[in-house]
Amino acid sequence: MKPYSFLISAFALTVLQTNAAFAGPPVTVTFKNIGNQTATYTPETSNELITKTNANPIPETTVNANSSDTYTIQSPTSLDYNHANLRYKIGTKSCIYLSTFVYTPGPDGSKIPKWNNKATPSGSATCTIRVTRTNPSTHAWSVEITMR
Image (cartoon, rainbow, N blue to C red; front, side, top):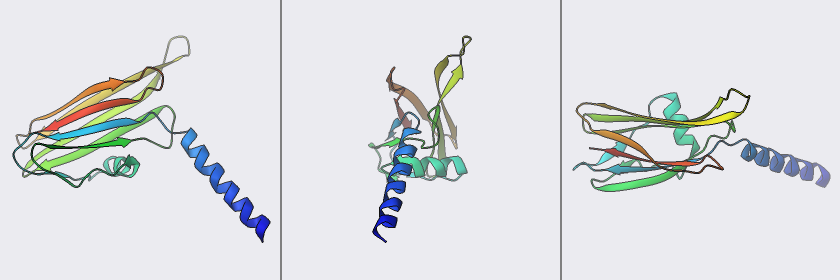
């Protein structure tokens, strides 16, 4: 029975290492609540729930006024892609944020890194997203998102 247990352990370790090898570049998110009420993290769509699953640590459910929360999101499924799709609410105001990384094909067959960021407000919310850092060798990046 011991050889069987050893094989299962070795297989599990290999799978964990393989999944880490296929992880896309991480995005570090800093959410800043610059409003005067508590903001609530409320993932609703499948992409928002995937983002929550890929976050470390999991984003705080609530962020007090004039406070912030920081976490990292990394897709374990592709070296060439990562995204952070987040939704926060303050009362009837809502902000949906999307930050993505993808390699696009270059004219010579090379891979060109591309980052996109979008903030979508509703209910008279003010939402911003901005890149604060990119790493040219690993393509990891950081964004600051704000809500009022």
